[in-house]
Amino acid sequence: MATIPGMSSHRCLWIALLLLSASVAAAHDLDDFDIPKLRMSRPEFLQDPASAVQASVPEDFATFFYNQTLDHFNYRPESYTAFNQRYVVNSKYWGGADSGAPIFAFLGAEAPIDGDVANAGFLTDNAAEFRALLVYIEHRFYGESIPYGITLKKALDDADTRGYFSSAQALADYAEILIHLKQKLKAERSPIIVFGGSYGGMLASWFRLKYPHVALGALASSAPILYFDNIVPQDAFFSVVAKGFLESSPSCHRTIRRSWEEIDRVASEPHGLRKLSSAFKTCRPLRSSSGLKKYLRLLYSQVVQYNDPSAQPLKLMCDAINGASPRNGLLRKIFAGLVAINGNLTCYVNAPASGSFAQTLLGWSWQTCSEMVIPMGITRNTMFPPKPFNLNSFVAACKSVFGVAPRLHWVTTYFGGHDIKLILRRFASNIIFSNGLQDPYSSGGVLKNISSTVVAIYTTKGSHTLDILGANKSDPDWLVKQRKTEVEIMKKWLATYYADLRAFGN
Ligand SMILES: *[C@@H]1O[C@H](CO)[C@@H](O)[C@H](O)[C@H]1NC(C)=O
Ligand SMILES: *[C@@H]1O[C@H](CO)[C@@H](O)[C@H](O)[C@H]1NC(C)=O
Ligand SMILES: *[C@@H]1O[C@H](CO)[C@@H](O)[C@H](O)[C@H]1NC(C)=O
Ligand SMILES: *[C@@H]1O[C@H](CO)[C@@H](O)[C@H](O)[C@H]1NC(C)=O
Image 1 (tube, rainbow, N blue to C red):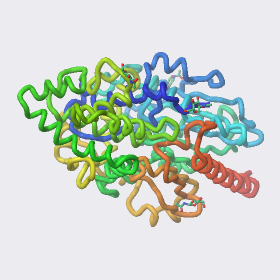
Image 2: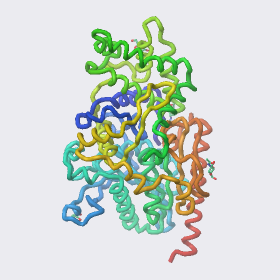
Image 3: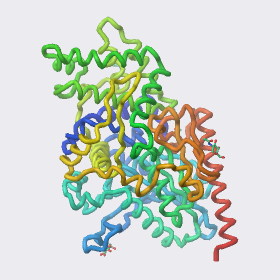
C-alpha cells in the first residue's frame, strides 16, 4: 500500500519541485515557458532513482521485459528494431483465467514505473475485492524502457531515435503488452481496466477510445485532456492557483501579489541580482530576476496542485509567509514560505536537477515540444503579473532545441477534445474522469457527465491524482467517498461485461 506522505517525506517532494526551474541543458531555450509538471508527483518518485527502485517495487511484484517493437506505424527495416520494455505484475490477488477475473493495468507516464507501483495504491487496495491481476507498464523512453538501451539524453540528442517518442507509439506498446499478457496467461476472457494519473490519465482515457477491444474501461485521474488547442482559456490553470491562495489566506495572497514588483525593484538596484541571490540563497548567482520569478510561479503552482489533505503544503507555506516578521521586508516573507516547503537546505532556486526527476524534465520537454502542446499563460490574474503564452516564441524555442516545430493541433486531431460531449456521448463508454477542483489542472479536465457511463467524478477539496493513491486511515470522507463511487462504477462495467460474455461469447 502506498503511503500518504508525512511531513518529513513530504519535504523530499518539495526539494525536487524546487528543481523545476533548473535549466535542463538541452532545453535551455524552453526555460521561459511555464508548463507545470503533469506527473502524479509523490516523494518516492523524486528521490535518487537507485534507492527508489529498490525501495519501491514490492516483493509481490515480478518484473518482466517485453520485446517491444520500436515503430508500430511503419514497415521500414528499422521499424522492426526491438527494445526491452519493463512491466511489473502482481498475481497475488488474481482470481485466475478460468473465472475470467479482471486485469487492472496501470499505464505509466513521464517517469520510471517504480514510483507508480509504490504510489498508485488504489489498484492494490482494490485488487482483493475484484480478484484482479495487477500490471504496471513503463512508458517508452523512461526508466529502463529506452530504445537501444541508451540514456534518455542520448536518445533525445538523436533526431531519428526521438522521433519514436510519442503518445501514439506508447499506446500501441500498451496494447501489444496487454494482448501478449492475456495470451501468456490464457486469459482471453479477462476484461482489462486501465488506470492512469495526470498525463497517464490522458493516456488511459485515450486508450479506451482507441483500443476498446483491449480495455473495457478507464479510470483517468486528473487528466487535463481539454488543455489543448485553446479548448480551455490559457489562463485557466493559474487562475485556480491564485484562487487556492486567496481561499487559503488573503494576506498570503496579497504578500505574493506585491512581491513581484519588489523583486523587480531590487533587481534594478546596483548589485541587485547579487542581493536577490543572497536573499534567496540561490545555488548559483541569478542571471536575471525572471529566473527567480519563474521558480516562484512554479513553486506556488505545485503547492496548490499537490495540496493533499494530510500534509497541506499550501497552509504550511502561507503560515510561514504570514508568520515571518515584516521588519525584514517582503522578500524575507516569501523566502520563509520557500523554506517552509523545502526545509532547511544549503541553497535554493536553481539547484541542478538529478535522478529520475531530471529524466522527467528532459523527456517532458520533448513531449511538449512535439505533440503535448499545452498553451498555458497568465492573462488576468489576482496574484500573478500577466505573462501570456507566446506561441511564436514557443515554436522558435522548440525548433532551436529539437530542430522541429511542435504540432499544435495533433492531439485534438488524433484524440479529439473539441465538443467532447457532443462527440463522445453516443460513441464512448466506460470512462471515469476523476478530478479534485483545487488542482489547477482540473481546469482542463472533464467535469461534466458525458453519458451514463462516461462520467465525471470530482471532489471540491481534492488536489492532483489523490484518488488513485493508496488509501490511508487519515483520508477525509470526501476522498473515501470518491474512491468508493469509482469502485461501484467499475463493478457495473464488469457486471455488464460478464452478462454480455454469457450472451454473446463463444
Ligand atoms: C497515513 O497518513 C499519515 C499522515 O500523513 C502518515 O503518517 C501515515 O504513515 C499514513 N499511513 C499509511 C498506512 O499510509
Ligand atoms: C525481439 O524482436 C525482434 C524483432 O521482431 C527479433 O528480431 C528478436 O529476435 C526478438 N528478440 C527476442 C529475445 O525475442
Ligand atoms: C530551519 O532552521 C531553523 C533554525 O535553524 C529552525 O528554527 C526551523 O524550524 C527550521 N525549519 C525547518 C522547516 O526545518
Ligand atoms: C456523474 O454521474 C455519476 C454516476 O451516475 C455521479 O456519481 C456523478 O456525481 C455525476 N457527476 C456529475 C458532475 O454530475
